[in-house]
Image (cartoon, rainbow, N blue to C red; front, side):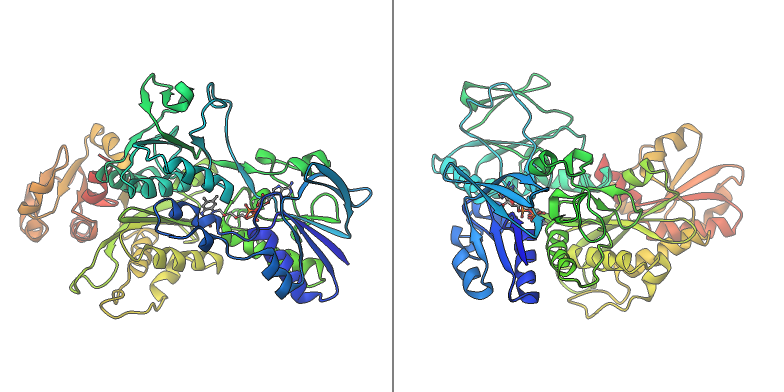
Length: 542
Ligand code: FAD
């Protein structure tokens, strides 16, 4: 068997090495158009600041080492320029010469390319870069050797924000320009607001609902769509990515959204001898079964192994992906898994939402920090659609537990049952994930009715009255626009001040005390809703 793998990084190299472990006699050729294989693309931003000190640390493997261990024929600087499915051949360009190479099976792991629109002045701007490969990083490092003072990042997704942090560590002024009204598209607006506030805290300026219109003065002036002008010594385009499927499309393979390659459960494309994996393919969103694009390292690596299994005759089906991601933005970590509220709404899925505030470990043990966790779930079955979390510590653990829960088909009713490791420095006896389960069950079982932050203005317009049950001292930290103040501990004694014909909303700081207030009021015959996320969330978005 002769297998050609196109693309020698995450998915491609996982496929090639697994193939070798299963087929000692196969001829396995990896064709990579760049100068390196198996490099740590996820680590690239961290070399900008020197947090990953040596460039060599990013070169995880060399062709020589892979040849020695796996007997792989790895050819760097070899670009596949055409696929001829009928002849089972690829045309390969190397040092300006093109030659044919035949295959029995072909695996495409060509990844994704940064979106770079045709912006006037871009081609004359030497200081404008993208970040996808080691050569991209080398250009940025070369630019940094001229001691830039000002940098502009176009796009506030993962890569943009990671680069922002690392440039800031080099004392460079950073301006971010973002087309959307928020940072980090996988998060919902209110969760992204925590990240935006952290950026502002760190003196990173973000211009929302704006984009670059043109570059002037060889890229030293960035003119924005709103007319604003930024000075830049270094600009990074981090405007998103699209599947790299040029050769697949030219070969007539079936492609779809943004050029993504269609594959079946065995990663077979529309040609049975050609397989595709990684950022280049359309995957099934495991929760809904819908087609989607998920460009992340974990699915790419898994798919690499599975395609090798599939080609080797092992029964291995692609179950789909849910999309679990995490990013550090200065002192904050933001992570998400599954669907966000925006996409659940777009797909008209019946859903409920809760926000739970807690600590990464026991609040009485020194160093505890806040976590805000959002859960989106079906209001009757409790199926978990997605989760998001922000905080300084412990966000990874909570999102990973919830990602596991989603993959395993657990519901919110199972979350209180999870027995998570606990001692005071590490967690709480009732972890925030357990608490999210309790809170979601209160909604499902009708013990609590919540109202979301974005429904508040409308509720006020309809005459609903908000009762703030925080203590008097807490009001100094900020107040709701309109509210009645009755501290929780006084509520039972002051019920006579309230009107049973009036609709009320209760809130405290994080939602725990307001839930108790809601229970007192409901059981006394009052009409009441609990403000989900409470004042802490309200304050973040304002
Ligand atoms: P890649 O790993 O990108 O490999 C594709 C390779 O194919 C490239 O080397 C390319 O040169 C080669 N190629 C393309 N066309 C041809 C051709 N015609 N002939 C020969 N070779 C070709 N994901 C996470 O989950 N977490 C992170 O923290 C994270 N951080 C990231 C940070 C950065 C800066 C970048 C760029 C990506 C990051 N990712 C992260 C995404 C992750 O790296 C990708 O999802 C993953 O590498 C995809 O694997 P792949 O095999 O599909 O493509």
